[in-house]
Length: 302
Image (cartoon, rainbow, N blue to C red):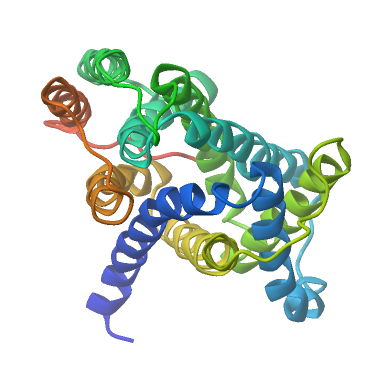
């Protein structure tokens, strides 16, 4: 493998991960049309876990460190556990396009978390960009119109923002863990913990196990379990093991673009004029936070 290929591979992996993640908003909306959100989330985790079973003998050879247990748990609790709870609620209430736009704030949240947790320096420019992006996200939500795809966009977008807070915690803890554990194991660990976490929800009254097969929703669940949980997280975890976490988080800005396009093409989503201006404000905030200074590097947690 040449030096150029070695440098570009994490970038290509990140772009592919962002495209897959953007498509997950559409896939989730399709899956929710036939199954309860908890059935969908457990299904994708269980399918991904089955894909990793063959790698279990390899994982036994890893150099386990007791001090990493808490970071593994933080990573898994943040994502997939809490992240998918918030995202499931979000996509019940808002459109795939709007949820995708909220993800643009993840790089800023990573920077803020790195400042508060890892004591990294965050400039006033970054903070100003964060405030601007927040204003844009609030405007996007307040300007939303109730529709079949977005019955309560304000509350749905709020849940998606909480999902991004969890994603920021996941990204920072993941960066620490990649110094000792391969991306394949970390992706598998997420899938196994996610399966255990979401299984009890199927035992609640009114949910249960799916009792019927609906082609489009079922195929969407299979897609989520393989291409998203296995593919997107695998690509992202690999890239974070090769480049700084905050730099990798910057590629999340591609998700809104892909998400809006896919939402319009597949689900028929639409944004009104005010929402387009709000989207522009979010991008301006993200751009302001990263323009003109070096992206902070997330250091291992001691």
